[in-house]
Image (cartoon, one colour):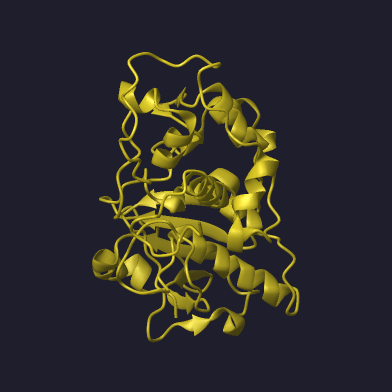
Length: 298
């Protein structure tokens, strides 16, 4: 079974201070993904002009750094590269805070993505998706926020704001002892999937909520993560968006009688982009990834 968790290791990317906003594009990109950037360059004292900024690799060039994620069928990253070329940070239209690709607090697009939403994935999932976020989770580090940005029938709710779900039509993605495999699920019966996004030690309280505890639990097959955040629990602990992706991958495989054709790969649209940027940066600088052995192959 796979444990669904959201690690909070690594530094926050939520800072909107001038030093973050004025960082080189590549460093800002890594910070947004929650990766610590070594202070090996002097702080910038003024905002860089377009000519002074580090030119980011194109979407096509980034494919070289996808490694184990290279076989996914993804919408083009061109619009995300535009963010780095033109920004790299933009004001959120709702809260006005400085954000790079999207606002993780308001769950909305910013900058070029907001101006051209058709350039992003629009993935309608076979089961609606509700993600219940623990109130102490840092949304700047949560991969769960990626789902509603690419799927119109996904949403984020903050615990204890849990709807009264119908247990006859709603599943809970969680590897409990009583959970069943996706292949055992009668997909004609269920209309919604619920996922809890929290640290492992806080799952108990959320699972005891009466609107969650009554739901049938479903589990996915075991997978090793490609997540860049360090955790010591298990080699099979996934980032939340990875777990969500594997659930829907198994659903589509069941619908297609054993075949998966990439129908929900775009759930990993942002995740794969951040992965490629991290790999690119560390490989180009010939730097070891300190917390996870062999995460970057130099």
